[in-house]
Amino acid sequence: MNEQEIEFYFCYNSALAAKLREANQKLITVAVSPNTGRKFWLYVRTKKLTETLDEFFINK
Image 1 (cartoon, rainbow, N blue to C red):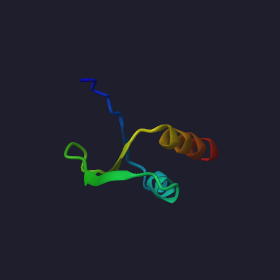
Image 2: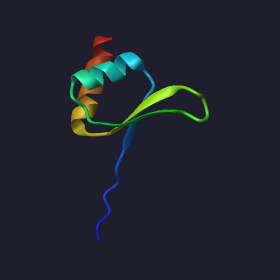
Image 3: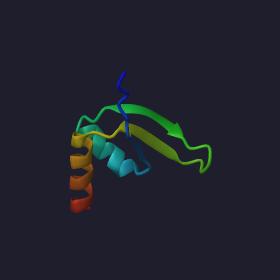
Image 4: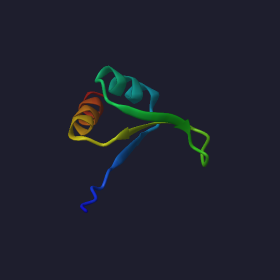
């Protein structure tokens, strides 16, 4: 049986989370970090997600 490693992206930036939502990125969950108390949005890291992140940070 082949196990595929899944990478996650934890987003702590509400403006970036809005951009990811606009880009129709699939959100896994929204939660609060038990260590910091900060809200985060969790996504599976895909090629499309990486492209959206690159676009966001280049245009920031």
